[in-house]
Image 1 (cartoon, protein in one colour):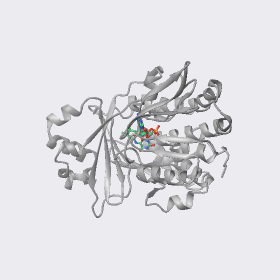
Image 2 (spheres, protein in one colour; image 1 turned 90 degrees about the vertical axis):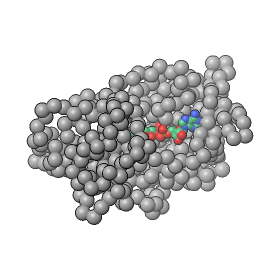
Image 3 (cartoon, protein in one colour; image 1 turned 180 degrees about the horizontal axis):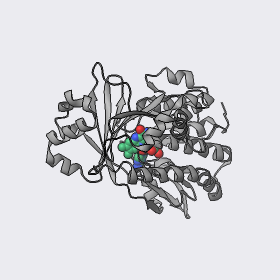
Image 4 (cartoon, protein in one colour; image 1 turned 90 degrees about the horizontal axis):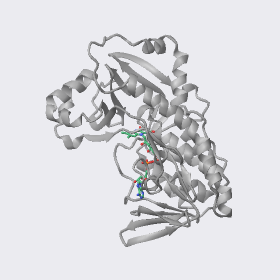
Length: 388
Ligand SMILES: Cc1cc2nc3c(=O)[nH]c(=O)nc-3n(C[C@H](O)[C@H](O)[C@H](O)COP(=O)(O)OP(=O)(O)OC[C@H]3O[C@@H](n4cnc5c(N)ncnc54)[C@H](O)[C@@H]3O)c2cc1C
């Protein structure tokens, strides 16, 4: 959507195809980072954007083995907004779509599921899409595959994918909030496990990291054990874990980290999770996907206005974005293998880990994770032209 918005803004004719009828899906990650808010400012949309319902998080706090620790402080970032905004992803996408639709060059087609690539003389020349009215062919000078982790575009293009094993899955659910609950705290760490509680005003969005493939076993063991595990991580949940009384209330999300060896071939460029699926660790996947979108528009918008772009032009996008992706994925793999494996470690102590002590002793250290999460390596800025 962001790529479509920026290219249409630059005067390039764009058709965005979305397979669903709306953007309303839960647990897709609702974090809008300071770098993204900066982009909204650069586009002149920030004030209007911040009028949408959202929560603002200035500090990231963790509870490590029962000890509260501030781990990231966004108040020193060199950005206009020194916080992460939590906003349902559908509000963000609808906001972008409503602004994009003001450009005569933009078309959004919902319920258009891309089923295949059209390849002519070795070059991708468009896609076929399943629509309520039957199959449709959509042709274009360039197909941008921004279709997520299970992308049809990179599958049909036979792109080689490098998988980096991740030992975790995540269970997402909701629990009610009550008077006297602790202030916004995001992560409860204990013995290689993590329970994330995202304060969504009237409820907590709950993410529980489990060992990969262990959900069936958790179900077999039953709710009593599951509830006890949640309470062991965050004791104040004791009075409400019984709300989780049906496994249909709990959604399993399998975590993947991978990336394409090449993101492009003639007529096709993959970006976002389609080029590099991210784990939820650090909550940076949306940010990275948006940065890819900005880089794509910066590098290609003016050329696309003149006609088809070359493979060398498309490779420039990968060259620009692959380095930050590699760096963040490497850190995510490290975290999953060494810090949060989802598998409880026997005999671990209840003392505050050394890293937690460092964050407590040296407040300036909290600026590093804030910068990494809030802005990320190689932040992009809007340089693509505005034609309207
Ligand atoms: C459990 C979990 C939690 C996460 N939490 C966070 C978080 O809190 N913060 C964060 O920043 N990141 C988070 N991430 C990562 C983040 O979700 C992704 O990195 C990010 O959404 C990637 O954006 P994207 O636009 O590339 O792909 P997506 O957001 O996956 O968007 C792809 C779009 O393409 C559409 N589509 C797919 N196939 C087709 C098709 N064939 N035809 C037409 N349309 C199609 C989909 O419906 C969707 O709208 C999380 C990931 C996981 C697994």
